[in-house]
Length: 356
Image (cartoon, rainbow, N blue to C red; front, side, top):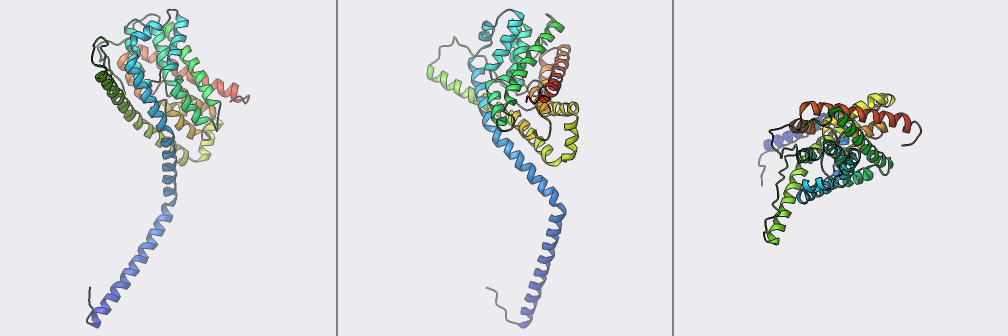
């Protein structure tokens, strides 16, 4: 304990104490002025973080469910089995490809190399493309996630997204067949397992009679490994999308956004561009889209939900890596054009009549 023996020491300590108090008051006033000066920025950051965390908490369970189911199907269902159950007729084949997409919850980037392998094994191009376009948007996990996201604000959104997703996949597949006919669209000389998610899809030797215990253990480990890799890859895109969506909702002035609502065409183009840019997985994009309701028009949000699962930045690179350049360009033109026209028709016909 410090002992004060002289009066001079006492005076020095008092003066030092007063100086410290004075400096603390100045610091407090400066901090208060600083907070007042930057208060709008602090509040916006807080708002962005609140919306961002809300989107993540809503989306993570569905992303986990999607990657687990996707990994199970990838492990146990072979391309040969899919090829056997597909019909040979063109229209029936396209419809079968769309229906197959309904039952298989796979991400848009993983389905591309799968379709390439199917086509190389003899599956008609139009069936493979129909499956590739339908699977990421009409599978049960995406349907349930969309229903959960919009049930309280736009209950019919899940119905319109599913039906229009089927329509878009069918129309684009038919138009691509008419445009390309029986041309070889496969790009040769690449890794068969190439994927934007960097999945490692191992071939399974079903004729190998190992002990059931070891086989089940290895299968379980392979499924967990695949699911973990896919989740980590999807999660980074989900974070990016959630930050962008939260920032749009909090930072952009409502008066500016009203201009988009007054111009449905521009609003649709903006959200289609946004969907293409952020490259979200379809099991998570509905939660980002939910946060855009009220900021953009309903038809614009629908265009976001229809384009993103079918075409985005990351799967564009994989498309060019698996298919010939001319085919990919045709596919992009058709997908963008059909989605845009679909959103315009929804806006002019259904929304005008109060049907959505």
